Amino acid sequence: MTDLRESLMRFAPAGVALSLVLALSASVGQSAPPQPLDPRAAALVAQGRAALSGGNADGAIDAFEAALAIQPGATAITLDLADATRRQGLQGKALHYYREALERDPQNLTAISGEGAALVEKGAVEKAKRNLTRLQGLCGESCAETRELAALIARAGAAQMVSADSVKATPTATN
Image 1 (cartoon, helix red, strand yellow):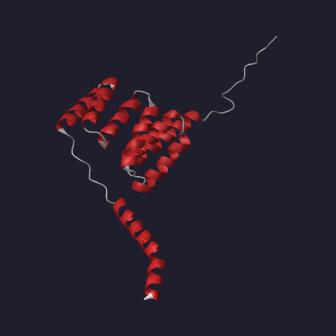
Image 2 (cartoon, rainbow, N blue to C red):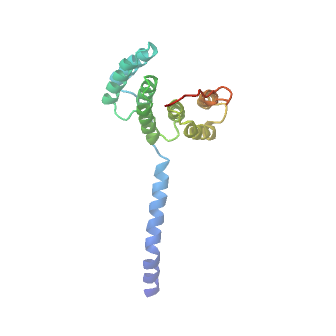
Image 3 (cartoon, rainbow, N blue to C red):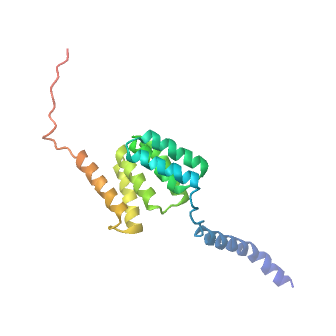
């Protein structure tokens, strides 16, 4: 009886810890499927997309924010809002929204690509290359998101290259 009791006391904490690890790892892969958009939120999203395609980033942002107020946590709306703020030139705010979407769905290709594009626009090309590597691992070279981010990084790299011959120092005299 004492041997059984001693064994139980010795291995019980490890058994409980192992059970918790298994339960946690099993629940990580189980994410809730995306909820359909509320009809009011869907109408605001459509209004925002129309405003954005018409060049009205402010109107689009207002519509997307209103849609998020109706349906908080909707990843699709968050990505639309990120795109609108990025087009308005607010890359820092866009990065916030892309990262918010990535917290909910770490393998969202649109969010990874959008974050990479915003990083390129901020001048953080090396960080954007990490996003490109991540995209290549998730969906390969032929994926639209991978191709778009790779092209954006290539254009940014070409714009940053400056030869020594093209830069001429102008002498200045000081008294």
